[in-house]
Length: 110
Length: 114
Image 1 (cartoon, rainbow over the protein chains, first blue to last red):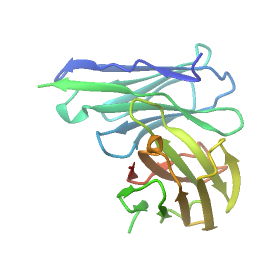
Image 2: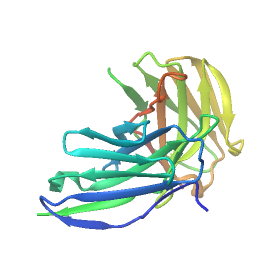
Image 3: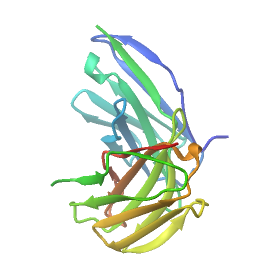
C-alpha cells in the first residue's frame, strides 16, 4: 500500500463546477495534512493545511479531514481555468517525515 | 529577495562534471530540505537539515552531497551523475517543531544529465 495515495487523474471539470480531490494515507498517527498546487514546470505552492477533523474553508477552497477513515480531501468551488494544475496531498507521518502523494492533475475546461 | 530562492534554475551537465546547487531561505526558518521530483513520480525527500545538522539521509547515492553552512543556506554538490538523475530538484524550508511545520518550496533547479 502506498503511504499517501491520490488518483493521478486527469480530473476534468467544466468552469464553474466543484472539483473534488481525494487523498488517503496509511499512518494512523498522522497529525498534519497539506494541499499544494503545482503548475507545470513550477514548484509546489501551499494552498491549505488542516490538522483537525472536519472542514476548513479558505475562499473557494475547502479541505476536509477524517482521521478515522484516514482520508483528506480538497474541494474547489466555482472552478476556474487558472485552477488547472497538479494538486499534491502531503501528510506528516509520525516521526516528522512529510510524505507526498503522486498528485492529481486537474483540468478546468472553459 | 523573499521566500526561498534557488540557483541555478536550469543546469545541463555531463556525467563527469562537478556542479553545485544553491538554496537560500529568507523566512527565518531553522530546517531545510532537498527533494527530487522526477516525471510522474511523487516528490522524493533526499536530505533534511534541522538546526544545521543533517537529520535525515534517505538512502541517497553518494554522488549527491549536501552541505548546510548555516540555517539560511543549503547546497547540493553533484559529481559523476547518471542520466537517470535528471529531474527537478527542489529546496524547501520550515520552522521545525512549530505547529504543522509547514514547508515552503523554492522554484527548483531543472537538472539534465547528458
